[in-house]
Image (cartoon, rainbow, N blue to C red; front, side):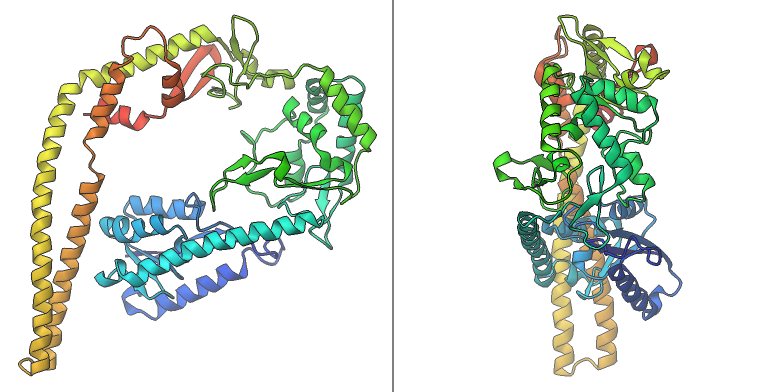
Length: 524
């Protein structure tokens, strides 16, 4: 048996960054609790134990690296039992948690134990009990309520002038004495001041980016990484990071460099998610004179006026459906678009770095659309050629579903019979017809039988719910609508095409949102 210990805490401990501690105290406490629990149960004595941990992740978010790694090993059959402190450690999303513990884990043959909640899926009554469902719902509601309170508290602190963002902007660091106060980071601050001076002296954002790259000035990301910033994920395409006109423009437009704190420009659209959306300017919290400025108001205004003199580059604008869907296969950045009637996609990385292979990445819009259409037709042809086999598969699947329905009905009847048998045993024991030893022996046999029936019922129900015979057929019918089209409808590009990567020599790699369905149809 392989047992997975899963540990999670939603807020990183303040001492997580110190040299003497590698994780938060709460994670350590969870580990001690689970180790003690496993040591007290002899059935786990010879088990192999692995640990997965998410420190600083919300339970509403199931994209946590630790839980994803654990579930991947569950999928591969490497884990047979999962142990957590309580249900909320595994997750605080009521529907997702319920689906895992009542359907997915039983179907995969994985035992789930929540120590403090007294939940053990080896006991059939625990999984679908009202107590377990109610606790999962409470954890979900508590998480939502806590999220609202935290947002309210942060907004209040921002209104009084505190800096509440997790990371200081480039040019500043958080004060060691007060993490809600920004202090100047001299090396980066000088770069920021220089950017404002260059813009005011008629240099474009692209000119400034080229200059900084030529001089080897570290980008904001690289500067913070060298300074020991604990941020693990960066809004960057790759590790090779360089200055771009967008980076320069963001600095020039940032009012925090004149001593103003701005809170709430972006908000999370879903509780627990890392995805954010833009908030309306009227909903921002703007407080002036909260920290030492790097440039004066006059210098800031000069830079804004100078930027208006340069025509804004709109290479990423949604002028047609391919916008933001075409990337460089070398550096990974979205390709820019030339202006005019004959649109060409090209990698702008070559504008900022010398001697880069990205200079060879370019393709015309017409050539790109033709290649996409040919790829779409080729995949549609495969699907249509297999239509007859798909129809046979549908008929077979329906027959199998009917067979499973009959098996399920028989199992449900057997479950009722075994339940009556269990009650009958107790009545016989209570009336004195069975002694205690016989009663316990027969009860154990009956309980084992009930567990086997329950597991088989869960497996059949999961199989029936997973089966949807309409998906493949609907996919093929949709393909027929545009199989012989001379052009690619806008809706198809938006819905089906995920992205196109362009490599040197105009070699294209296309990724479709329907990739799994295409592969399934092709392999029928």
